[in-house]
Amino acid sequence: MRITWRLVLGFLAVSVLALLAALARPSWPLERGTDGGSGTAAQRMSPATVKGAARCTVRATTPREAARLARPGDTVCFDGDLSRQRLVITKGGDREHPITYAGGGDSVHGITIEADDVIVDGFRSIRPAAPGIELTGHRVTLRNNTVIGPRGGDGDGIRFFGEDLTIAHNTVRDTDNSHGRHADCMQTFASDTPPSHRVRIEDNRCLEVDNMCLMAEGPNDGEGDGRGTTSDFTIRGNRCETLRASQALMFEDVQNATITGNVFAAPTHHAIGLAEHSTGARVSGNTLHSGIRYEVGIDASSRPGYRGPEPGGLP
Image (cartoon, rainbow, N blue to C red; front, side, top):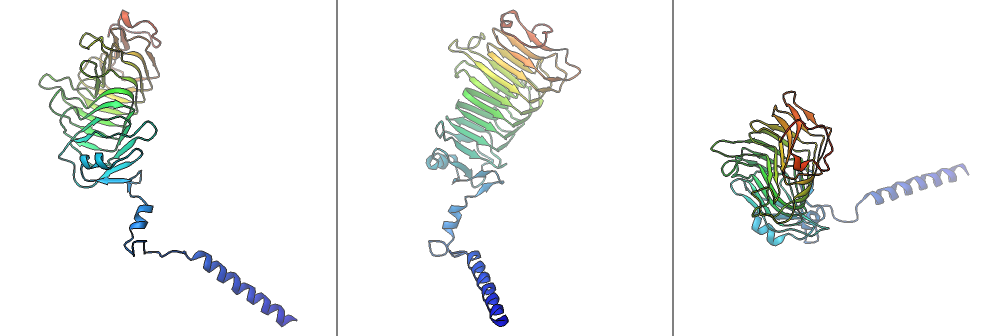
């Protein structure tokens, strides 16, 4: 009886080990794909990534090829060197499925966006033609991009026009006011361009900027076309170093701006200007350089609906 029991235990142990080995072994070839061993099927099952962030569903060598291949919901990654050409984006997705253009830190010579429903993420531009980035469209997100030393034109880092825009976690450095320029970190206006609505500008860095960190002008500011309105801006969590202008942020004919939690790190005359019916502004929680004389300058036309610290004078 003792011998029979030992035999049973041994048989059970061997059976369990065999079962575990069978479960651990994959039921498909490790290196062979359905194309006879080239590995293509495995590559399609595991899309490439850009620096561990974006999953590349489309790879293209040029912006034109990207426009031909991309479909709503795709993430486009570029092969090859685009550092000597401007990235022009003309193909967008839809409201629920934007197309993402993923840079992963790659260099381009500036960016122009003329499309709706796109995300542009992670490109770097050094001394591009100004504006370093220009976007016109609806439901556009611009994030994690860098513009250093834009040159020519009016010297701006980023210009934007449209609705439901998000500009977040970008860096603009070294805009240059020489030769009569007004080289802002960011700018929008409404003359021959559409007015902007529902714009979120968050957690950006405007460093060593000669002119303003943001210049926003509506259609009725005296230079606009008088059509429509510019409204509903959220300016939050940005760092601003403006070197030569009287104020860091300037709003003319822009309604309902919320300005909170920003750092104004250079000694401008005042931090924020509200003029020409820039009504409904809300200002709170900003950090000011000790050399700034007062936080908000405002004119009489912009007083209705204002909530914030007591203004110190005119814009």
